[in-house]
Length: 254
Ligand code: ADP
Ligand code: MG
Ligand code: MG
Image (tube, rainbow, N blue to C red; front, side, top):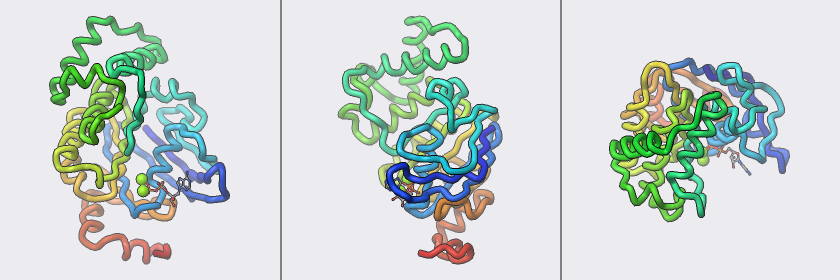
């Protein structure tokens, strides 16, 4: 279970408060979506949970199955089963995709006290997952994300997710970069991993993605807080009426 309580975050470099008291409880096996206007702090929330530098937590807490995410080392987060897929996946020149995946999988296993996967088993696993995602062998040999098209990066991100089989996946999507095919790929990837125990936090700007990934719960974030929580109908309402009425209701300037 992911539990975020009264999370306040400011930029380290300037005196700018971005998150102003985020509360969110995501139970095992559930899919929650966060929607909200641009600049409301959605990406900042995922960055802070992933431990990215440049942000200062001024108040509040975030725990994943008892692990304090705000103080955890990257390998502790991975061992706890946290996976973050980002709007702009990083390029890692010089590191082959296969090597990257195997290192990530083995460091996760090590942190859990499990033995390393054998070269043979790993190859089998990657081939199987790559095939189901229509990723060709050539892409597996190239350096991570270097020179990948937007669609290839997306595919690779879903491959990482399929291989690491995380307990808790956070996907931050700028839908502007998602064409119909990419959106289908992301939603199929997520849906294939839905198994009643794994949880997803899907951050998205538009409702479209949620036509394919049916969320259990929808949150609306604005001005650094979650202002509304409801079912899938909340996403449809926003699609139809925009955010203006909700912002107005909560006294948030537009
Ligand atoms: P969203 O993902 O909802 O569009 P963000 O988390 O990207 O929102 O941004 C929230 C606010 O914080 C915006 O006003 C953005 O300009 C500001 N912000 C976030 N990170 C930085 C940064 N590193 N430097 C300056 N401003 C930032
Ligand atoms: Mg944005
Ligand atoms: Mg964003």
